[in-house]
View (cartoon, rainbow, N blue to C red):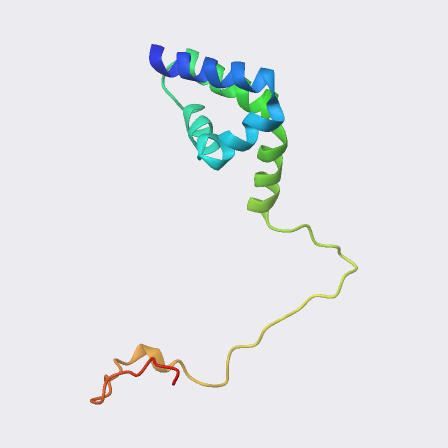
Length: 108
């Protein structure tokens, strides 16, 4: 736990120096997901540090992800689209034979 807290403290210190620059690096190297995962860590100290970093430096990303998870916001006055079932039956439910000549993927 101590190593994780020290690592999170180092990330927090870098973000405090130049949040824009280091936030991009944290995101590029999947650090954002790791920090989010640490918010469910069994150690309260790790949880608090990860939560503090997320709230201070990445609060906008969390809100964007929540909106994406809920789907796009719909304007009730906008037209809605409906899709009917295809008229052709699903032919993939039956096993398909492989052509005896094989497949040709060349574009010559």
